[in-house]
Image (cartoon, rainbow, N blue to C red):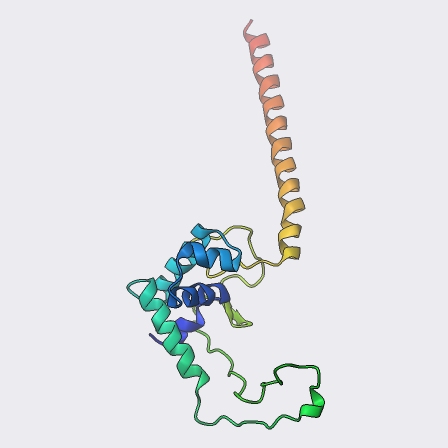
Length: 186
């Protein structure tokens, strides 16, 4: 499995695969992440497909191996901590222990074109302009913020109102047309 395949995994894919690695069932993972069991199953199935693994266990083991390799790099530097700077912290800041991860490479197709959309914050976005309130086939994520979800409520309400208005207008026009045709015939 190539690094490009791992770049396609979202945060939720990784969390679900880590749960599988910890020998947890879908229901346990769902409770831990605050998701539905079927949502966890779909994240795992999608992760298996994206990684090209045979099953969720193989995908979880591959992710664990990949993450272990990406954390241990030969050129890391340990930064000494000064205790005076962090008197109220139980664990001092460890940001200097491991170097910052490099930018994720864009997944590329054999012809050189970009696959899967834009990479932002470690997630590959299929459509960076608009997050839809439903998961679509092949969509790699649906981790909408609360604000995005709340924005969809009035949008859907307005769309439904317009749809019902158009239906009522159409039925009214059809009633009038049928009434006039029956007046002409009779």
